[in-house]
Length: 619
Image (cartoon, rainbow, N blue to C red):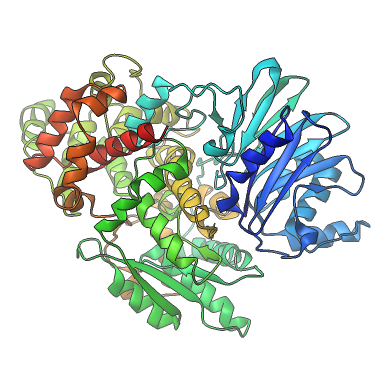
């Protein structure tokens, strides 16, 4: 796990500056390759996880001297690939997965991508063709941003902050991107908040040559399955796939652990880690849980039960409102506004976990892959609701729903009922967008003064492009291309790498996704959310853990805004600061008033505005 950066035209000093801004991602070493001053160059900062020796240092040049690779990530099946390559006469000078990737690319070109199991973002320079290849992994676990330059040149990096060290990039605010941030609380790919910087989307590669570049997709999820089998049969297929994904991610030459909330996702991973450790005759696994004073958010009891059942070395780490003091540092980790406050938790959890281990497995992606969000149930119920008589919906249900109260203490059921009723009469794509977006188009229009607010929703556009019109297929497909990479994976990578901690995510192994997406929607949601993962969990965990009520990993932001954060809100959200951010004050004042009076829970909207101001003042 590392940081990478480079350019097709830059001085060694610029390359070194980009590299140095990525030292937190790779505290164990740095490298810079450039054939000639002012020409193409690659840089690297190294977090040594596999093969800690200098032989694995990067950028790495092929034996023939033609190819140079700067690689961020892990190839989990590198030992199998290496054995296959050795059987064909290849020899290796290191024990690293980087060298296996380099040899594979030399032999097979981009056809090799289909053989990789892992998370990665890499740049490969072909000295003979004078061609730069940029590739991002299938799900978008590892980030990669790039900037087209004058004269047809190109610069790229793992992070926006590093890329900004390169001259000639338009760093003006993209108002359309700002509008999409307000909608999603993150800027969806391919945009960033800057006009001149773009994200390479997941599962895509960029090829630059002779002053021109083209982008093409090499993989995408395809939730179009229709396999009708029994749940027990599905478990017989999925359990080995998940077990393999976990075992693959336990390969390391450094200490490893697991984030454990006591929920299904992390508990399944911990159980399979413990199973593998016992099989290998190793020591108990390390598990880490964040605790809260607010009971509605705290899961320590369930995490302890799982840890006790597995016999893990368990560590509890207390969260508190003091975490909000990390606001400015958290924002700097993204290089652009990012409004999900769970990033604060991962920031602190990663910092303290890094004191014990270098690698941690986590359950990110379980909800998207195994249909674990309440909104999936809503999408399936919408068709039934629309069959109610128009007069009943329009004159009774909808007017009454506007009076449903909201809680700022972590209880969201009533709010979800109101949101369901408000959105269920839209077409499916607009309905889904209304549930997952925050500031709606009208609010964005008001905030931006009529400038930059697109009438369509970015999530609705993705939904409409889904290959299946079946609601569950389309919802999961949309989330795997938007909410997962743009939100969960973005804060997981940015905050863990802030502290040189490598996160590994077994539940979004592409082999697991491909096995799930072939199954029918009726099977995936048979009896409720996470039907299949719960069935897998029953083979590994106590029934009380499997059947407990779901809780998300979120901070009690409503409580914090009312108490500990009240002064920060008053200081940072003012007519002057909002005008400096390009936003109108009246809609903000209305949000604050409704939050103070308890009429609506605008916690995440208010936090996103705090983030926007923190990002603006840091520029």
